Length: 517
Image (tube, rainbow, N blue to C red; front, side, top):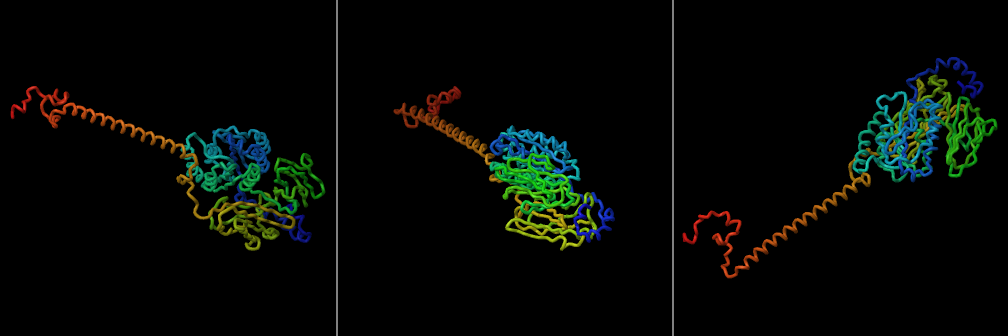
């Protein structure tokens, strides 16, 4: 128990017997261990990315994710255009995987011809029938377009509907959320948000490519929640149970002067391997310190920089997170426990040393504070089951779990998308829900066919009318040629008055009607 030396001397004396009995008081319970993260990242490399991401900020954003993924997690990266390619093979995250992933970042380009999202989802779930139950799998899909698998708009619309009607619900039921990121206004937001909702994931809009790294980090927080320590004015405290901490900064377009000062006054600068590993990009920086000295650390950065510090420690707060997406008005339950290494802390005397709370914030200035330590009895098995009240308004909520001790402080952020009212049918066939171009071509073709048929019918009718007029004109001329004959001459029954075609059919011995009279 590395946090004991930080307690007051008298309290350490009282806790010494407990420390001697610690192996009996904290028991390993692998079944209660939180699921390890499994991230499957899908990156669009279609030709339109030249405009959506002209500086190819997807590459540093991917490298950031590679550096932030915890050891022991699983991850894989696929790129997709007309076809799908494996950029980084799916496997366990370790030093070899990271090295391979960093080398592959340079392969991200804009060579794709289409946007085959269905094929990308199929590739990322290649093992859906044999997934390891000890991992929590999630998909992050980045695209700037819409489903584009064919030259036929109707085929594209049908492929999109199939994803929403079959693929997304199956992934949601299997526990594989798809978190979608739209990188331009040309992206099919209705499709991407429906895909996220149906699979119980979250949908994000990156208004600019600059915002991509921040959204990637938030996606990683959903896939692999990591304990953080609070900051005040660039200062944060590291206790002696911390094995490693990572500070991540987001700043403006101008790269500022950065530095990190330790409790002993030592200064760590980018580009110097003096106990700190720096990664500096155009708009963000990352610094990792292993085996840090306990005490107060100071990060020198611009005042408007967004900073977070995550820690890897023996003593940690572990949470079974809520679903990323849920309907409004539903009461839910959150599992929360403290761990020392692989063991859940169960002893009441140790649990009393920590204050645990949950703060919820959301739309319409929603605020809710839950004092877990003060409201719930000490659990015999070390696990608190915290009731989360119904969230009535639709929108994005953040749940921030906090634990604090003598010098130990931890924060664990979680994000939940609440859908107000009955969820809309994601496979609606209303014309408004179809891609803009899906009916334009067929309608033009139909109009052309109708015009052609109308013209043809008019031409045939006109030709028949002319032939009919010509026939009557011929009959009129024939009648005018015999003006001296009786008016009813055309009705005589004698053979001379019959048309040639008819007189030929009369028998030769036909009696003469005049003789009979």
